[in-house]
Length: 180
Image (cartoon, rainbow, N blue to C red):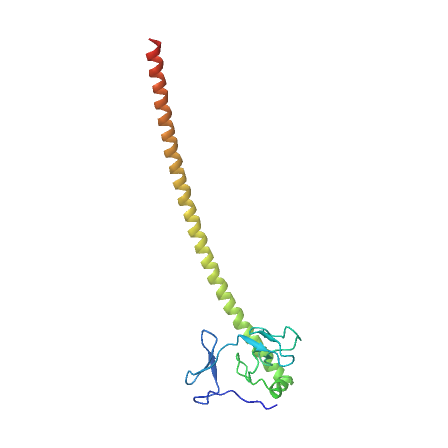
């Protein structure tokens, strides 16, 4: 099997990026190279699988390639890792199995883990602040609703006492009129 490096059809550049929609875009000229797949056909049994599947639903064979350097899962047909750009060929995978390759891979994974933990910590801090602000706003709304409820209760009690006083006064007047 011949390994063919993906290159831009316009400028023949071999470095790519992803746009917000997940499309593969040439870093040099911005040409759209490939759109995300809606379906993946298994090479072994021919079963059509969803585009996000890693293994075939029928036979269980691997539908993509895992990078030996960064462990990123790449879609079928990729000859370079979409995460780190390393070649996905057998020779590169074998090089990572050497002592030097393993050390380098471990160092890259550690760096990536530290970076992701830092990003996670920043995200969690932002979420805590957002949730705290929502909690404070909700508590303020509840205080306002409680104050409005007390005001309405006071008005209702005043109305009820006023109506009760008028009824008592009317009864007193009727009593006085009929007792004469």
